[in-house]
Image (tube, rainbow, N blue to C red; front, side):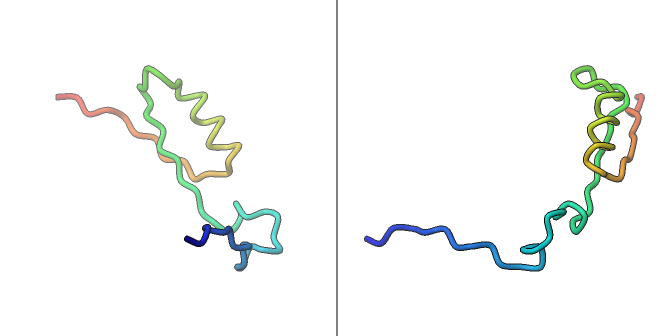
Length: 60
């Protein structure tokens, strides 16, 4: 049985070192998340260059 081999990446981003600039990134910030604070989520989204959308929880 032949072994699977990795093929070299060939595409539009092959010569571009900043691949993140080609792919849009979105981030959803849950303002009342108890596990990850909103400030930390904002920091990570800014560092990744993401478009950020903040949501508030619905109240019954």
